Amino acid sequence: MLLAGLTFRVYSDSYTVTAEVPAPIPPAATIISPADQTHFTTNPVTVSGDCTANTYVELLDNNTISGVANCGNGQTIYSLSIDLVYGSNVLVAQVYNITNQAGPPSSSITLWLDHSITPPPTSTTSTTPAILAVISQDNVPFKPGVIAHVSPYVTERGIAPPNALVTITFHSPSIPCRTYANASGVWSCTLDQPLANGYHVVYVSAVTPSGELLTLPSFQIYVTAQVAPLQPSTPAGPFLITTNYIYRVLASGQIFTLPLIIENGTAPYAVTVVWGDGTTSTIARSTTGTFSALHVYRLTDARQRLYTVKVQASDSTGTTDILQLPEIVRNNNFTLPIIGPVKTNNLLDVLTRFFWPVYLVLILMAISFWLGEREEYYIILKRRHNSRHNA
Image (tube, rainbow, N blue to C red; front, side, top):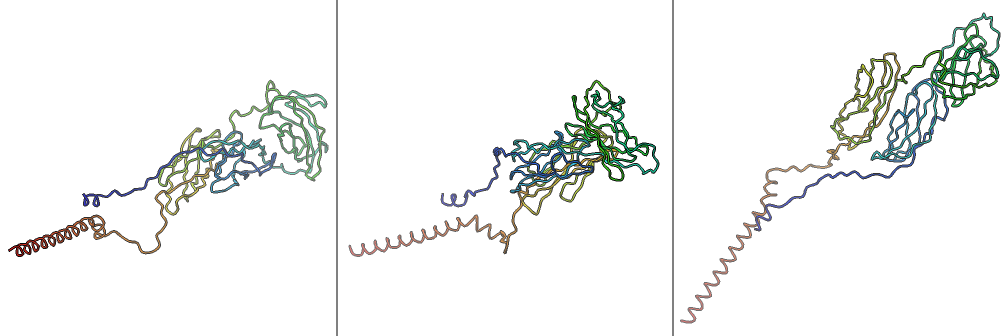
């Protein structure tokens, strides 16, 4: 029993147990930069703000995911590069904890992407007087003091000094329309996004090539869908690349499936994914909709690493859109390097480890046998001594 108990010993082992515990709901993130109502003419635009540590932030542009930023490892500031769509972009930062529970959304801001306008060639001849005026609205003659009924995509026409930059701004919200007067001083501007039904105040101004500012008194229009626009609006929205992002931690060697969604645009499409580990994937698509990009991260030099994934999509017209999101990869097999000599298990070590109880039992048996023989010897001597004494 002693030999069996010592030889067949039970050795302990280690196990990794994971459990999902809901994290506290984080407070709302903020959008600090850019400021509300900022106008841009080029993409991309960098958006930054505050966030709670150990959370992640989804940046929504007109209710569509435009980027995801990680706020792990005590980080409390996020920054994302996004592409704006032409016209208004209502941005909201939605915060999530590490178990994908949403916190309150941030206050929204509105950013504007304006069409860049190439000025017409300068001309020295003109028969148009150096004045600023509105001539018609949706082909209806303009009459001061009369509120015209116009379409949601209203077209404003007028005259201005030749080659002047004309800006027509509709309130509210603030939606600008910019154009240049031609060499004869005639200008025309059609909105590329719809105005809401109802009353709007219109401001018209112009800047001449010499830098002189001209303005008109503001006037009102009434927008109704019953008036057809002069140039029908395109029913499809802007070209977008987006995703249904879910926070998760990948294991090294695990297949990462990144769901991507192409919306609108003109086929064919090219999607480039920069995975953040030095590799890039290019995917060609002939249709819009949902598809997946696959990748495997192999982490060998650290236990955990955050990769920034950048996606850029373009359609056949050259229109582009970008998407940025984080991915965390963990290497559960990573161990710190051992400093000093490394001990290996040779055959002698193995025999010593598993058979030393046998050696101990054999030694105890030999000692017991010797003690028994010694006791038997003394008993025989005592019997001889007693028999002699009795004789």
